[in-house]
Length: 470
Image (cartoon, rainbow, N blue to C red; front, side):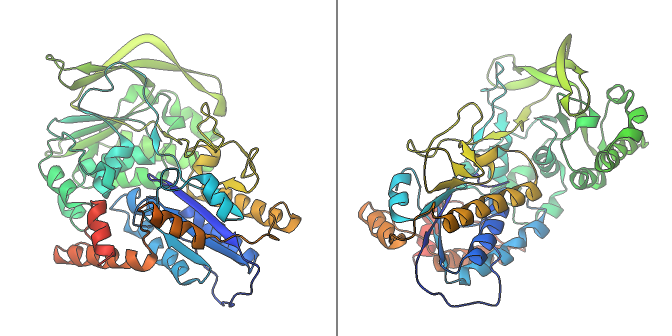
């Protein structure tokens, strides 16, 4: 998974010698670029990498997407930071590519430009009522509790007992876990203080995750599901009818899918009767949204009407087909976690609006020499971290091949950031260096230590910049 904000990664190839290093650089912003930089910086001693980031802070989805109660995943930031010491890699934050500087201007300054800005847009449900208060996108909700500046004013309404999440992937489980986790556990994480205060007053006692297909197609990983199963003071809330014929299919499943399904079945069959004072979570399978139901006065969402589906086809080709049966769930909060989509970054960049990607061949942007892409903007918002790692290897290899073949012409000198930074300054844009970011990091760590947390994130870009440039 990559950026909730715009991330572009151009670099310049300079025909000059470079000091050698005994330690391979490990990367920077996220899994896509980590592996790309390893390939590129190891692949040629003449490559200079400049990273342009819209926000004043680095690390992308590691900072703004990874759940606060997954600190072991965020520890990779320590490894990414090693790249800051590499003489051929430079961070330029606070630059909105496509607004402050165009892609064409970057391409004139660099031998190659890579787009790796992820999927910032939301897929919509396409049903009536989804614009009502009480309906949120998972992207915005995750950004809210993780301190993404554009989501700091979200103010989700947690005053109702039941919340429904549309989607059954890892993001949906992250959201459900945050809604139901004991506050004492969250207080030790880097979740934002305003999120903590809102969750402390939460009335949510039950979270249901809705999927259009069945238990054999659930999209989460076993690690995330096990966390839900083992979460203290909670119990599962499932419908046995959703699991008909699942046990008979177990023997023919691939091992990862079999283990995941067995865990769901075990959870379904555990006896939780008699447990008092627990919050509840569960899956609802074979259901698709038809309509968000308004309250009596029409002022907000009060429930959701779902089509009950049947499955047609076999294997990976199975599809959900609505029947005439419907189901309704009364709830005061609906979170759509049905996926993301990339958005066009610049009119000069080709864009496939139907697939929501930059059209490309092995990372080479179509009809545009010297422009490349990687990650979700290259292939769509699918797969796990390992998928994006392999994807970034492919794009890096493509670039190195083009360097070797001469498709990237390095015989002509390109000025790189020495031309771009003065141009930005003329436009009133001041960049944030990695050293500037380290001032922000120190301030956040200081504020977090004061309240027993690893950090307290600054939520306002102006405050970030004031700290960075002090």
